[in-house]
Image 1 (cartoon, rainbow, N blue to C red):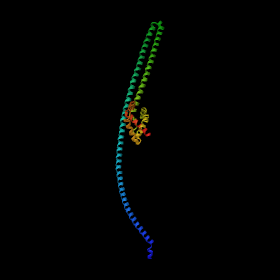
Image 2 (tube, rainbow, N blue to C red; image 1 turned 135 degrees about the horizontal axis):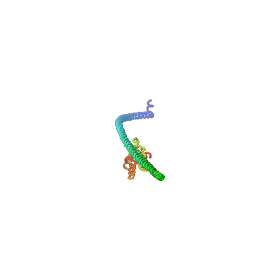
Image 3 (cartoon, rainbow, N blue to C red; image 1 turned 30 degrees about the vertical axis):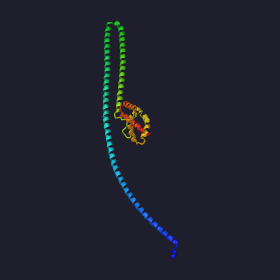
Image 4 (cartoon, one colour; image 1 turned 180 degrees about the horizontal axis):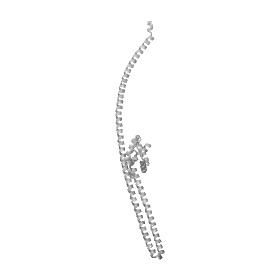
Length: 306
């Protein structure tokens, strides 16, 4: 038995076993060390996660308050806009009623004036007829006296009477022609005056309460604004300007492009373009700001379409 334990093979085996046991003990010690380090890191991560959650909670609370404030401001702005719209409608309603009253009064005065003119013409015609009736009556009386005194000259007198009648017929016919021409001219003047009054009334109604751009979002042209754009040649102008500006607005939101176009038409127009704006404003009887609004919308649509 002692010889068996003393063999080199057994000794080597025991040395190997001891080596393995030492390695296992060292590995176990390292694992415990790493587990401790991992536990500390996990604890730090938990604390960091807790801190992040707290910051997120505070951020949400803060932005909820900001959103409530923004909603309150928007609500106040909407109420203010509604109040301004109601005031605008009431003001223009009074203007329209006043214009209608003035136009009706003008038409009544115009009709009364022409009725007086026509009545005067009719009076002159009646006076003319009465005057000739008296003349004819006087001639007849003279004829009867002449017949009694000079029957032999009846043929001659009759001939003179026929000539006098023919002369009066010609005078009456001429007067009728002149009267007809005067009445025709008067009718034409009345029709022309009525057309002018209607045109002035139509123009007044177009200008009262008429905006070139609607107030809804996004802004767009009204029928009146389309007429201004056509007169200015706004679409052709925007088609020429837009390619030069796209690089500046390529990263803009639509509302930012709208504001950019507003600033551009207010400050960047050339002298020739400003003269066109003034001419267009004069043609339609509005302020230059109205033409600027039209150009702003047309340029914005051109940039958004590109």
